Length: 410
Image 1 (cartoon, rainbow, N blue to C red):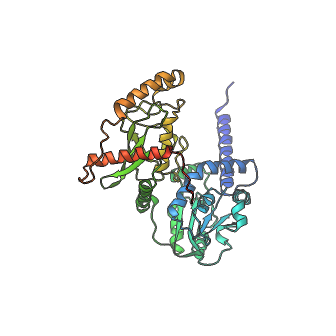
Image 2 (image 1 turned 60 degrees about the vertical axis):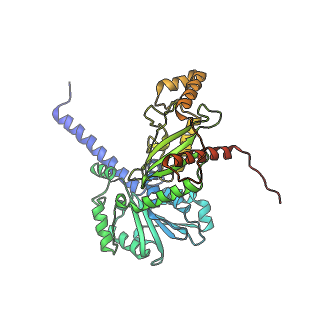
Image 3 (image 1 turned 90 degrees about the vertical axis):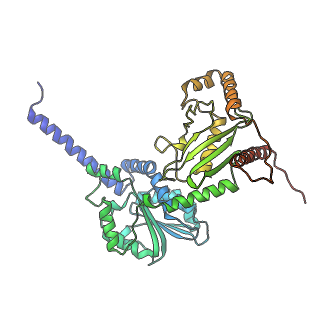
């Protein structure tokens, strides 16, 4: 016979109680991971989920080479590792604190050499009681941790104490994800609400609050630096420039590699930089038709560097130059196992001579320049002449890259 209504209700209650118990246990491990199977799983979870947030926090902090930088709740040490690369001056110093002894040990192992050198100092302590002197820290950042602090106001007051006047603190989190976990009782109490945290910070003396998505100045500054680098030190066979006055509307050209079906071709690309760059990848597509397994007839490109995790490999530490270089490599080495064009992929895998023949034909028809005349230096350059100049620069860069390095004897 089937279960009675009362038996079913009791069974449901037991299941609910177990789920609540496991949610509370998970919340405790997220807030204070221990050396256990659950703690090890949490460390893996933090490493996979927080890497992008850690890199975002480091980027937004605007760390200068000689700063003293503090990370709160450093976890396995991913953010510390990213920040340490920016502190290149002798006075640059990095401090990390974490309440979990297990996380403290993991970060100590990850950053062993930097700890030994004195560049990095790690403390196993509560944020509300840090062994740091007053007004000694330039920048503070933390990721997915403030809602685990037992007393937000004490923590905020302690952070304010150790920061220099005019210092900057950056907090990153996936709010929707946190709200979902709070609904499942994984997050303790109501401290996860950003408004609660900001109220504690204001009471402690912090001012000038801003949301990261509203901060467009850093994005513009980064794009200017990237364009300057692309202008002065472009990758071999690649040129990139902004169109008109729009810094987020770019064009690029890639020279087809030697000993590939695209040799002799010059391929134009369109680059749209999103508002949340570098936390979202640029949107890039080919304007020149190309016969390729990973590029469709609209010019869209299937490449990990152009997609966000977990499906993609985009990171804020990447840039337009590295992405264009990876696209150049994809042209030379297609990935038939992740195609946009299934028929071309099948051809590439099982009938490579036919693929090469068709790709060469497309290159000749669409990408080979019919008129490479030299621009008269005494005449004012027209837009068409400027484009031709960029094309010659790209071909020249490719040719220079293929020449053997010359040694100078004195």
